[in-house]
Length: 261
Ligand SMILES: C[S@@+](CC[C@H](N)C(=O)[O-])C[C@H]1O[C@@H](n2cnc3c(N)ncnc32)[C@H](O)[C@@H]1O
Image 1: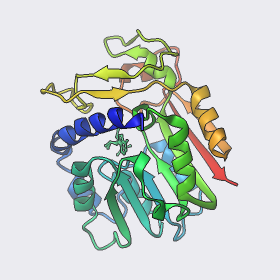
Image 2: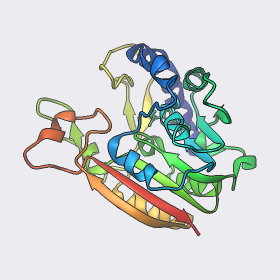
Image 3: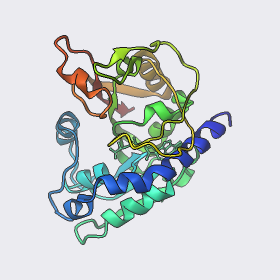
């Protein structure tokens, strides 16, 4: 239960920023109404297109406003379930999915650590897109839950910020300021408006650095088998985006896929 203090506080912070994020994306509702709407980042889009999605069941954990799950639905997936711990973002996801081509799509509010067992072994694919693992105080348990959601033979597809990027502090230019190995809970009170950096009286949130070794080891411990792993210098998280054009590229993102045995 150690995770509870951090995740519950952080989810309050996500709820608080939901309305600000919605204001930053005024076109999203209209864009999502198209049956070819696709908001996936280029490299993750390629990973998704390499799968057989035909009528496959897909769960996205920490789905935020659901734009990535709806993009996958538009590629031919079957039943899609989006889960997020912020009920305000889940409301937005439900609003985005109010179009006739989004049949068999549901969104539910749960802290990932408390997803009910009735969802276990239901899915051909579990999906995690950018900006999730850093909110997880207990990474082994996070992977264990992703694994449990999958049917035998199912796959976990992930796109994430590379942990090396978390060593940098944003600036002009962004510079190394933090240890790669600091695994303490990190308190942030600057808010979560990563679209425009609006300052507001922000609820605190807590984030966690997990090294690449931590991520791969937690996945192995859960029983998942690594299939593909690719690092890239792409700016997928809007964080320190100047570094995407740095003369000596650093790893800023990775995509990975695992299969359940
Ligand atoms: C950076 S956003 C993910 C954005 C998503 N990749 C996208 O592009 O739409 C992180 C999401 O994780 C959710 N989250 C954070 N901690 C969580 C937890 N313990 N359980 C469930 N959701 C959580 C937040 O509410 C937020 O919507």
